[in-house]
Length: 507
Image 1: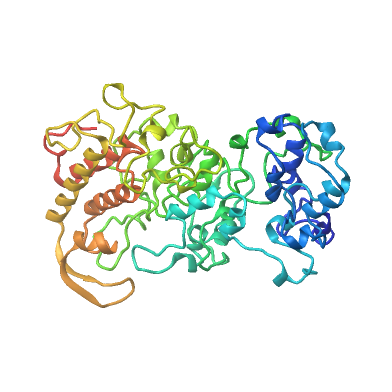
Image 2: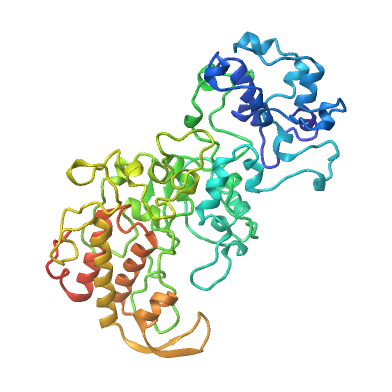
């Protein structure tokens, strides 16, 4: 690494020349050989085989083995006759020859590639967001990422465009765009989400990969003291509890688009930076108070999970609304459930759900309910919870049966859909924003569901439409916040019809 710091005393965008030295990566071999992760190599499962990822240039190809060398760790270890120790301690690590130590730990070339021919030529050094860069060593997480589906360069549901190529959208649909977005936030204080626009963000088709969310170069929880020496208490922290996990955006207080401030976000701040509403139900520009006569896109904008989780930004009717216990009881918010892993998972195992898939179901639709929810919830007769459709406490949709929460929410969505269909006008509508071309006549609610065009909907119908789309786009069918979801749907029905769904228990 010293060969690189001669020209790169700090990385681009940083002012701290020691930031990488504060990370676990920069001390991986040192931690183990010093005994901080266990003094017995057999019990700590640490061997020279780990050097393939934990040293620089550990190359055992024939050209290296026959003595030609590559200047990397294996060649240096061999030429200095150093042997892997049979026990670990600080004294054992201190006794390693300096020339061998110089190849230890994860360094610049581990990720950026050999720099022997670099000499300032940017074309001869690696710098990218490719998941394969991290996947060379962190094999299970990238394999899980490929199963995640939603973090690729996505196509807009509304009009088929690629948001990753639009500057205002790239902050959440493009890897470098996300980095530019979070780096533009103030370093301290409340982060305010006021606008989706940012003309200076990078665009392209780079997906949301490892290096999008995690900063390879720095951590908020330094493992070294002011003199650069390992802090034993930090060196012994288990891998699964490495504090901020080098997330670029961590535990920030966030002001959502409607002014609501949420706190205690922890690791989930990274998720909440994007999975939030872009439009406010409190804004007359977003939720008009007059019937629309032109093409008007209506809705909170797809990923509304943060707003729903905290019970805010629905089109409310002026009465009091509440939230389920998840808001305060689920301490790690998004990651506590979506990234939970099986208790018997071994290093290297690839999750079919949870982990870096963020998925809540297997390919065969088997839910992750027992692992994700079983710590707090049980199923019938105190058996392990086998479904997310946990039994509700009331007949919210009025069909005469107390069913699972998701089933009750689905019933309410159908009731609200039917009520809107019956009451919406049938008329001509514009085919696109800013054009005079019209189509129809169509039922304006049916048209809204496929186009997001609120043209022809009355103010009351627009509130109900907003809430219907808000619940649909949350995609949890009430799991994130059952109380708020049910209240929005029941009261939207009441706004339209004058009463709660017949036979239902008002929430």
